[in-house]
Structures are given as structure tokens and as C-alpha cells.
Image 1 (spheres, rainbow, N blue to C red):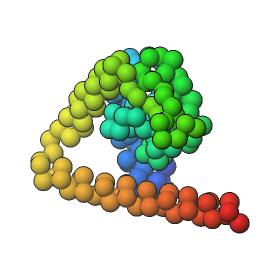
Image 2 (image 1 turned 30 degrees about the vertical axis):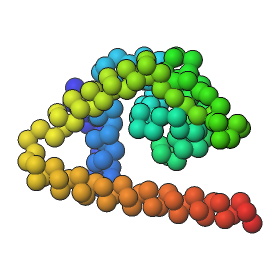
Image 3 (image 1 turned 60 degrees about the vertical axis):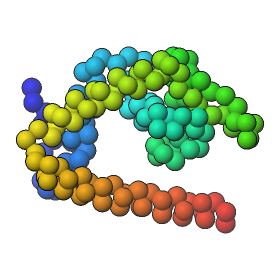
Length: 164
């Protein structure tokens, strides 16, 4: 049965809602890979991608890169460690911190995830010209930057309030 989001007139022409719908469909496509364990969770896939880009990151760096909450990242890292994808080691610069490193198994899982994402992207972008793809990417980048900027402003306000 084809995906049909709930119809709500007040949200029918909302581009961000459309992005959410596309995201859900993309995640559904990736779940077709029958991923088990912690990697069935979207947050774990974000952490894995963050470590693939910056292996040896601290929990704080992963939180900043993924916009997940610190307790969420902590739990995900521990589960990923127990499933053999990540190795946690003391930070040589600050022994109070742990750094996360992908194991060979974690790198293999990441490689499979990247292939699945590429397949999903190819399906999603089928029929779009190169020019249309570039325009779409430029517009989505601006939307993402607006949302990131609003999160940063909220974080700055929260930090100021905590200091007062």
C-alpha cells in the first residue's frame, strides 16, 4: 500500500512537512535492509556516520555533530560498543572524557549503510535533471542552515539562563 501521510489542510502546502515525509520514506527504504540491533535506531545511524567522518570523537563532539542529547549519545555508544561496532578509550588529552573509535565491524556496517543510502537516493532523484538536483540541494541547504541557526540561538539562550 503506498505511503499516504495524514491529510491536514493547515499543513498541506508546508515544505518542511514534505521533507519530513521524504525522510520517513527514506528511513523506511533503509529499514528494508533488515538491520538488527542498535543500528535499527536512527540515532545510532547518525552516531555511526559522525564517527565515520571523525573517528576518535568525544561524546561532546558527537552531540554537537548529530544534535542528539548527551544521554542519548551515551546510551547509543555503550550499546554500539557492546555490539562490537565501537571501541571507547580514554581521551589522552583529558582522561575524564572517552573517545569513540569505529572497529572494523563498525566500518563494515557504515559501508553497507552508505550503499543503502545511495540506492535510496538514486530512487528518490530518478527523473530529475542535474540542474534540478543542484537547485534542490541549494534550497534544502538553506532550509537546513536556518534550522541549525535557530537551534544554536536556543542553545546560547539556555546557556545564558543557566549562568544567571
